[in-house]
Every structure is written in C-alpha cells, then in structure tokens.
Image (cartoon, rainbow, N blue to C red; front, top):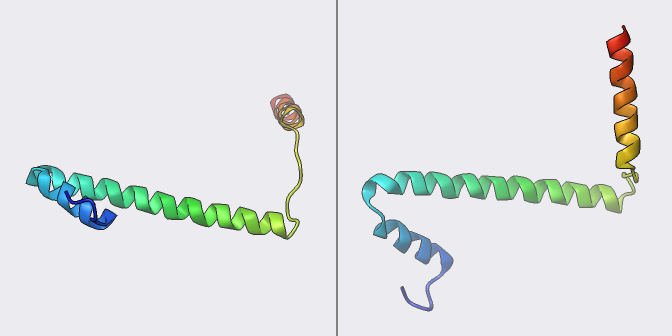
Length: 78
C-alpha cells in the first residue's frame, strides 16, 4: 500500500486482501460503525445546542438515586 493512498483507497485495498467470504461481513461492520458514528455525532451536536441555549441543569447522582428509591418504595407499598 502506498504512502499517498486515501483512507478510502486503503479500505478498498484491505477488502481485496480478504477472502471473498469475509468481505461482506467486513463491509457490514464498517457500515454499522459509520452509522453509529453519525448517530453519536448528531446527539453530541444536539447536546451542545441545548447547552448553548441554556436547556440543561446540573444534577446530583446521589439525589437521583434517592428519588428513584423513594419512588420504588411507594410503588412497592401500593
């Protein structure tokens, strides 16, 4: 593989090195990872927009657990 190959060219070359029966699986894996990356990127962008527009609050994990346990205790009693 040449030093000046793009990442797309490198991926294509790597796929050509694989036996035919493994190529489909490798392509499926790459597509899945790309989809996950784009989903994550969208969620991070949405979170940054929420932060920039002041739509967030600080929260305490201990308080969250305490409230959850209190709700669970009420549902057990009823």
